[in-house]
Amino acid sequence: MPLDRLRRAKRKTVGTKQTAKAVDRGQARVVFVASDAEPHVVEGVVRACRERSVEVVFVESMGDLGRACGIEVGAASAAILEE
Image (tube, rainbow, N blue to C red):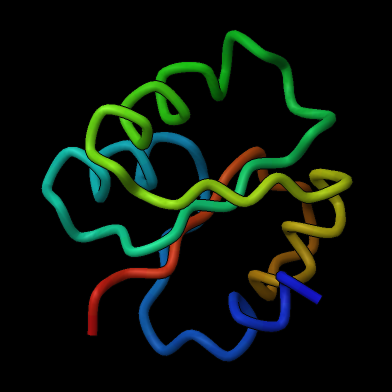
């Protein structure tokens, strides 16, 4: 399951603002985006990933993504950072 990679990651971001910053800084190795997130919330992150050739993995729900990040609320996006 793709979220296992995120659960095991030592360094990660949670949330669209922090993930976008990591992509812009060239720190994101892979970005996870919840399929049920509002498009206007995640479109900038997805666009930045495509421009910088960062892998994007779409997951089923914000709840699943939040749990994989160890938080009790949903998350629209998250990233595994370079070690």
